[in-house]
Image (cartoon, rainbow over all chains, first blue to last red; front, side, top):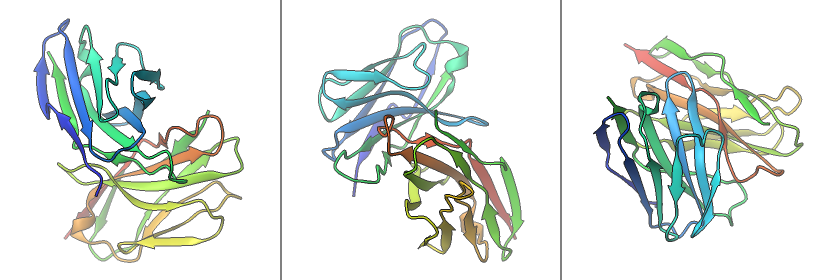
Amino acid sequence: EAAVTQSPRSKVAVTGGKVTLSCHQTNNHDYMYWYRQDTGHGLRLIHYSYVADSTEKGDIPDGYKASRPSQENFSLILELASLSQTAVYFCASRNWGTNTGQLYFGEGSKLTVL
Amino acid sequence: GDSVTQKEGLVTLTEGLPVMLNCTYQTIYSNAFLFWYVHYLNESPRLLLKSSTDNKRTEHQGFHATLHKSSSSFHLQKSSAQLSDSALYYCALRNSGGSNYKLTFGKGTLLTVTP
């Protein structure tokens, strides 16, 4: 079974502070993704990566950076957290070799910015 | 770009009644993969159903869906709702073209099944 783990699972941050959300996968998957979940908006793609040391912008990248130091690890970085970034964040991985593109999700990281 | 529409944001049903959650999509590519993901509270979203074959019914865990390319639809159905079906359901699309690296999700439908 695919395994994607996120940390922290929950975090409270202050406006203007720096937040780092981490994701680790043991699936040996090429692709990793960061999605944001908001009521009424569903899951929206922030950043993704298909190889270590490279990241790409998704649909809503403003205010976020990403880092992929290894195939297993993918971080989402909020340099200056804002109230509007309060949300649940999901990391996911996917194997390029599959022809369907099924995503395997982590447990989510609930971020509250005050 | 691609888009997925889930008309109902919230569906409340009595146990035993049939379930139908709507999903329509738009993509310029003729081939597309459609998915239903289910997200139970305090768990990770996980795949429920997937299809890329026109007019073929796919089933899993009592749920079924048929991809109809003529109407760009992939509605999720179940004959009899159970309390344990209460969850957030996402329809998602992956195209076969230039943005095939990602899945585009709908806004989700929260299904609540009551006794």
